[in-house]
Image 1 (cartoon, rainbow, N blue to C red):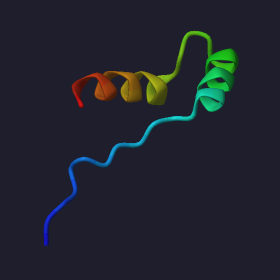
Image 2: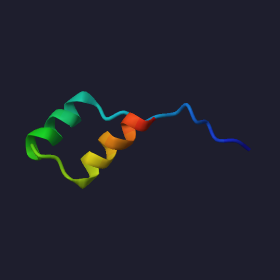
Image 3: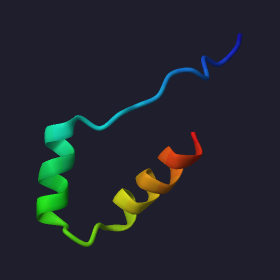
Length: 40
């Protein structure tokens, strides 16, 4: 058994827009996603 490392999850554009409207300064989960997304 092996892991498929090519699978990534991308937040849909509309979801990201709503989240940024609600949390203009971000929140811990959004910052973590942004930081980890840059690594992958």
